[in-house]
Image 1 (cartoon, helix red, strand yellow):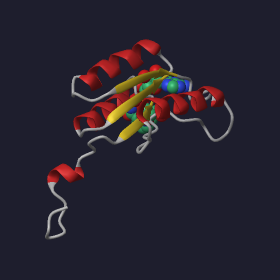
Image 2 (spheres, rainbow, N blue to C red; image 1 turned 180 degrees about the vertical axis):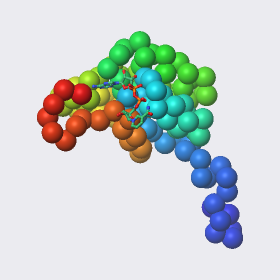
Image 3 (cartoon, rainbow, N blue to C red; image 1 turned 90 degrees about the vertical axis):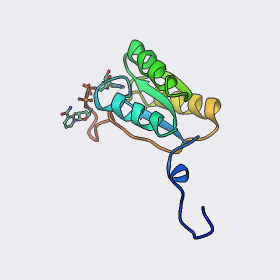
Length: 110
Ligand SMILES: NC(=O)c1ccc[n+]([C@@H]2O[C@H](COP(=O)([O-])OP(=O)(O)OC[C@H]3O[C@@H](n4cnc5c(N)ncnc54)[C@H](O)[C@@H]3O)[C@@H](O)[C@H]2O)c1
């Protein structure tokens, strides 16, 4: 923060913040993942299709950010817990959680 108490542009970016984006392999989730990377965040790509995880992770890295591709079905609680543990192990923190794909409140196939 500057002496005048105003944040500088660099301070308002997401440099070194860590995001998990569910459904991050495609559609809106991929767009969110790339937007976060362009603003300086490292991104965990959580998607049910492994190839999509890898593709988005590669594009995140093109922004000079770190990416962790995590194939996971967000309806599988144990798999989601394992994904969160993997994210913490890789980055040591989680700051942002956009859920482009999330578990429905009522238990039904998603
Ligand atoms: N696209 C739109 O116009 C629109 C409008 C309103 C709401 N939405 C909602 O926004 C969300 C994202 O929309 P989209 O068009 O990007 O969706 P999409 O169908 O492109 O899916 C986004 C990603 O989610 C992944 N995915 C699907 N099921 C998953 C699961 N169980 N676990 C992990 N990943 C899974 C897919 O592989 C895909 O890469 C959806 O919930 C959709 O209903 C979309």
